[in-house]
Image (cartoon, rainbow, N blue to C red; front, side, top):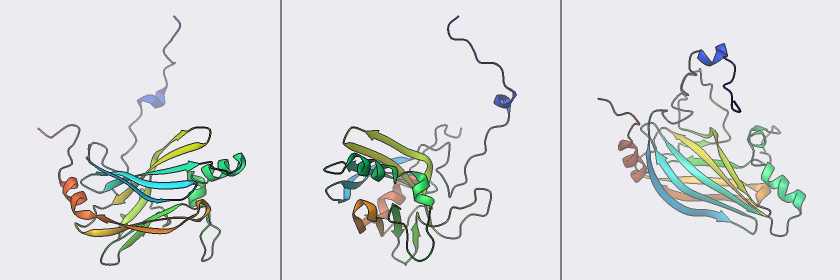
Length: 206
């Protein structure tokens, strides 16, 4: 036999991992409702940031963002460094003080009442109490990469909890090392809230 079953391991029969809490990820058994956005938020000669879609759930929504990089005159080393600064380790490191690292790609939302949430905020403890306010975070494992010789497309998922209010709100992005200054666009929370109410589960209740 060429392909043989692996040896039996006791840990494979252990209890399943608990689901992530609602403020960290979508409900595991929920399909959600997708909405196409297809909007370029900002671009320059080497970087473009686009919001491709929103997937709404009963507890929040995923903002699916594409960060597209092209070499366009950058040296191979500079282009590589730019791509590597998108990885999680670069996102969570801080030099302290009042200034954020230039390599830190950051996103945020701000509602009409002044409520604001950003990806710069400290991570919540999955075993702790729910955050008191709106939370925007990078979805664990929610990043993919398509890369060519001189082009890289990074798809990242941001989890916004809870569902935004049914009114316009601001979505912000800033990435100094990529030449992206603070850019704020308006999104409409009404269709997102409506889509959240239509979210279905993979196994509907009998």
